[in-house]
Length: 516
Image (cartoon, rainbow, N blue to C red; front, top):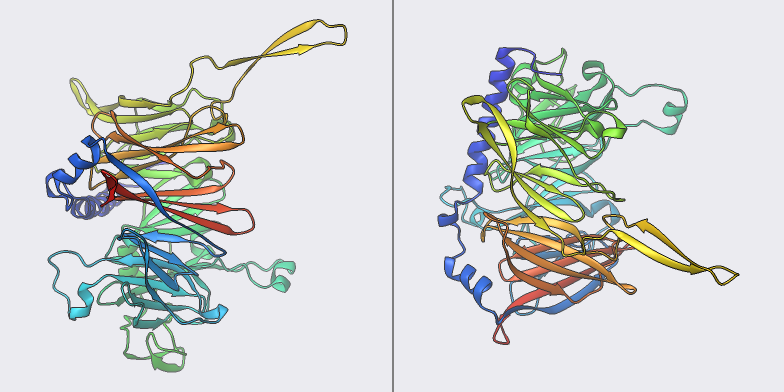
């Protein structure tokens, strides 16, 4: 585990410095947010400000939400939630199963950028279809603005931001080969492909193959902020510079819409049936930036200065988190974080998305916000300490007494311990950060009789003080999958029930009985 050499460390620091610049551009400082301070004061301090359930709908296909838009039927139908009652923005024509949208990202025009076309200043949905077309769709009309055919040599399935709002990565499904090939024990050398594009105007950076002959017995790979992250079954995680790989191993620069000759075939890049050839093929092991071993490949980088979070690679260490300095792998003082809890679901930890360098550690009955500071008289070492803690509203006594009567009439009292995530006690299920209002939002759930009752609480991001609580009227089943969004004057709850039944509950803010 560690940093291979000083040069690789400098490359990694350069990549991470780019991340900081991008994040600093995306997350608005408190005084520059587009939400006026008056809105925050009205929301928090006006006792008559409440949230009313204005709309509920159900679907047999997944429901997605992005910036005031609710998507149904695999993104074919879009409903605007920015109104007193949701209204349909558009509905695209019905399509075959092979043409359905499998994944999508919402692109919003950055303020101040000069773009080639006036239509580019409006939001777009970047969508990936089941038959390997990458589409740019108007977010207001559903009209297809651009189409790129990726090719037929693999099945592309996933979309993600490499650099938010600037560079996208299109990831293929893993190549497991046909049943006959698997039965014969023949190993497939290519695990997957990553297609990388600059967005608006769309331009191809390159398509990279992840080859087991180069990386070994790799199980997955992804791209984030210009860093290629490669994962192994053993828990090993390795980091490489994508820019270095592209510069060293790109076979031919390809431009969308231009004629190309590849492998004896001539066609137009990005058009059917030619598609986009894989033009980045690694022939030798690229320079390693960093490697670390962690349980289930869990690995995060963040903080000021740079630190990383891992779980030691042993099953008995699940729920134990180590916070270490990236420069020398040294464990921070108090850098081993473990919740004193007994629960069915694991606690989770991550770097705070507000770019403060803090860490959020969530358990069933508490949310800890931790800060990373220099040790006094030793600026080269850092320590972890509590900034504040949010506690669930529950009784301190975990013991329950049960009285039973034997056949002879003797009363026997037995005592047992409740789990920390026992449904009859208030338990934290969702924790999120609202950057425009600089608030932490926390969903807490309690099982009352046969129903789960949930409420959404808003806490001061600086001190953790509870500022407002919003009850959710629908029952919350802890065995279902849930997503909760808070977007200025809107609260939206998406629930997935058994047998692929999806429900969406929309709440609008009202003051003095009037919707805002």
